[in-house]
Image (cartoon, rainbow, N blue to C red; front, side, top):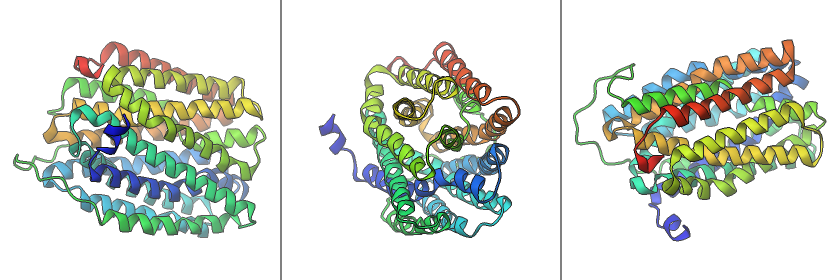
Length: 391
């Protein structure tokens, strides 16, 4: 595996490095937002669900649009540069927020940046590698992305432990944000497609039936996969100190970074569907544990370690499976639909999770998410029928 890993093209490694640097900025502040929301802005789970859901939903249409524009123009780099630039400016501005509506606006800007870059980046990555190495390439990308998610929370923990105020920690996110923007200038676009520009379409017309079914499965799973920020609130509720929350998330990201490459590369041999089903079931076990068995100490950290395994088994594999299912001339559109499906479903998912938690019980909220994961695993196995090499 190591020989194959280091033989991957330069562009694959550069895309991974960009994600590493970007996530060190994003994840520096990500675990702190729910703490800032509850302790400074005095808002609870319902507002958190509203902010995260609305931010993703408003950016969702842009995810599809950006993917379609890649197919039409044959160029990914301009969208990638613009996306990282917008997010890099929006994140540190959270330091100046005094009310949750402003926080909502900045989260929307951050998600718009991600929406503009996500499908073009994934399409460029898929075009840079042979189909037999897609799992390995997407796994490397997720490993480097999650490595940034280790660095960011550790930086946040170090700053908080040194007595830096919460608001000022957000300002430090500007440094890796600028570095990330500079790195995108070194990207090279894939060769333009030989086919004529495609007509802009807001429908699934022309996409294969297995791909459409796969999007339904993703929507069902995402309905139970609300914002990770609820996990930070749950950890704080269980007695984890504010300064320790970034460390907990860094541990999750470290597990995901460690296992992303071998698990995603395994999908090149044993099939994408099998890995995704295993990941969905790990997610269900984690959420049941958070509802019923979580307690301060080693059990909580073990549960969060299982969440890292879920991330490693699914994040790269779900994109590799989509690349397998999509025709090359509509790969950008397909990734746009994947990102749109995830983003649009996150609004009801986060609103529902926050409402179940605050209005009924935290156990029901986590139990509902676990049920969606099990249902998605069953539907994926029974309904999505890719070629035998992808099973």
